[in-house]
Length: 416
Length: 124
Ligand SMILES: Cc1cc2nc3c(=O)[nH]c(=O)nc-3n(C[C@H](O)[C@H](O)[C@H](O)COP(=O)(O)OP(=O)(O)OC[C@H]3O[C@@H](n4cnc5c(N)ncnc54)[C@H](O)[C@@H]3O)c2cc1C
Ligand code: FES
Image (tube, rainbow over all chains, first blue to last red; front, side, top):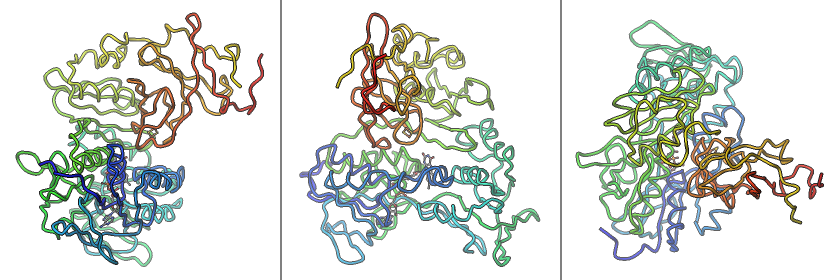
């Protein structure tokens, strides 16, 4: 499968985290050919997690959330073409098309991310109904979130929960609507999902279980009608956070296999030898077909790096265990690996901080924690290194988890 | 101008800072703009500004291994020896400080560029 020769021109389509990460890694691996990064947005590539957190809260500015400063791209000889969407790819001819003109390329990395799924109900396109994916979305939303504003949040997943939390801090009256009584239950288990979800009510957010069936225009404000109940919610602004649709349109129109994402192998290669995909736009496939697409920050980072390696035929890097985080109401939630098997609790559920570990056959396979970042780092290494652990040690707060990773290195109970 | 060990700040005894551990010296004590964290990585001692240059986490809560500290919040990593930011999301280098061990005491010598009095610091 190795390419006979190195590409002379690599085009990275999509200047988000996966695209920037791939460019960084290409240079890191010694690729010194032409490298062009196309971004549809006019902004210097930025980080998305702060959009629903510190940016919305006014704690960070747009300038502070850039992934890399402009000089970095120049120093790495990366031709950064902002405000330049790629309109089509012609992999067989080795070309990509822009609004004006075409460019010859040898390899194409699709790192186009995803678009927020729209609200598929009558009235769902009302201007008071917004989404949160881009910096422009976040800036526009921030302008509308004044104290007393009635905010409806549809979807209580990660972004919905964070928006409700941030809006509450900003003095808005938030209503959070989701058909699932326990969002994230499948990821962190019922008990922890319940704790996380109950945070909303405890902080003054109105929580409704239900699906929005239609949107009524009240002239300025809007009224959400929920199905299966006569419940209505009047809002000044609504944020829809019901997931994303992977942007696989360029691959699909070029006839490259997609299935809710560009289908790629474990090295981020699509079925076409010139096309690679990474980040939210890519969907991994296993022996039994497409796997779930992981739409988190770290996976975009690592998929970008892996794609860089594949593009120049370098060995496939070892992937760290999956991880994501989320921040709401002062809780820093972290999830690594898979939360299945025997659950071992460390600390008090619902206390200021706690962790829970998932064990299978005497090994940690996953962990969830609130405000315990160091322990999550230990958990991650326990998982990655496949180290045997005892439930009793994990549960015992007097055992320094680092000692379980480094074994002989650190005795338990030393100062931190 | 380099400062002698008589300008150094005693941090702790070597027994109080085991391998993989970190201890934070408050900025008031260090006389610097930021707190400084002293690390023990496999028997070697290092010191960096405490606040992660990515957002605002304390590197004292980080994971110390293989000459690096990994930030608790978003896993950005820094070289313990030089303070170099080792890749996304950590892209801005931090400041490394000198650490000396005399007898069994770990001393911190804050980098002069970081002193709040802006000068070469007066000996006591
Ligand atoms: C508000 C918010 C908060 C989040 N918080 C967290 C969090 O706390 N923790 C976590 O783990 N993850 C979080 N995430 C998820 C994480 O940010 C994403 O998984 C990550 O950004 C995906 O990176 P990407 O590069 O694949 O896609 P994106 O970041 O979406 O980048 C894709 C880029 O490609 C551009 N593009 C698309 N089509 C074209 C084209 N044809 N030509 C040129 N450019 C194109 C787009 O404009 C976009 O800029 C959050 C996401 C959002 C939106
Ligand atoms: S605060 Fe350190 S990596 Fe983000």
